[in-house]
Image (cartoon, rainbow, N blue to C red; front, side, top):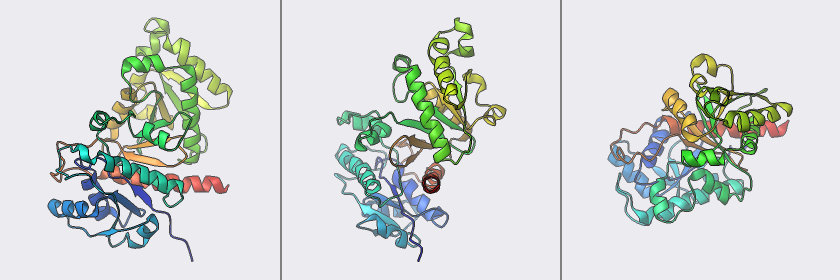
Length: 338
């Protein structure tokens, strides 16, 4: 008898946002094409929300992830997470912050104990978490702490059209400039190279590194970071045998012809990476955290409080995130078996 595949854990996200709606739509419209997943949330909330959306579904409250695969074809498996207060779409309730965090922590625990193949995180509302004392800039840093990971995780955004990575993440542009170093670029590119091979089954990864300044610094006349930081890092990576080139002017790195020449672009700061991918493929871009001891993906958008409860949110990015988490899980298993 063939063992059922491990399910994917899908976290609650901010309950006042669109995460619940997207989870319902992902299961209702796509469950016959998707790998089994279970939602860490309140089952009664999800059923009531589906009724309000005009898409009534039946949930199945489960006590452990292993029950999800058997139930998935007929009902949305939900592993209950107790809410701290009522949920009104579009209206934040700080009493539910504990449930948001518990949902994430439970998913990590399930991966660590081998009962979930991967985790997909619905969007959290960072500002409300910060106001409640949350000590991490975002999911990536929180997951790093939960995993006890001592290295530097890497944020990749991926779609069929483009993969981009940020060397610095959720910091101001001013702080990004202070954090930028040859060592950070080297470690980031090495992590990306491993992921392209292991997670995306790219036999010979091609990586392009973006410049920081206009015109790649114009020989030092528009900034020295390319000469003093980025190019030395690239030369070390090339000496290690990686197919890495740059620094490439960012304004010519993302058109269709340029994208055909690489498997991932490494960018120096947040918006340098996210603007092109959200412009090119907003509805299907996926956020992946590289370097962790487990698989984590997420839709590449926020909580969208302004449209929560209206039924207009599109589930395509979440569906892509679930699909990609499954693909990475399969690719890692194949790589480990070689």
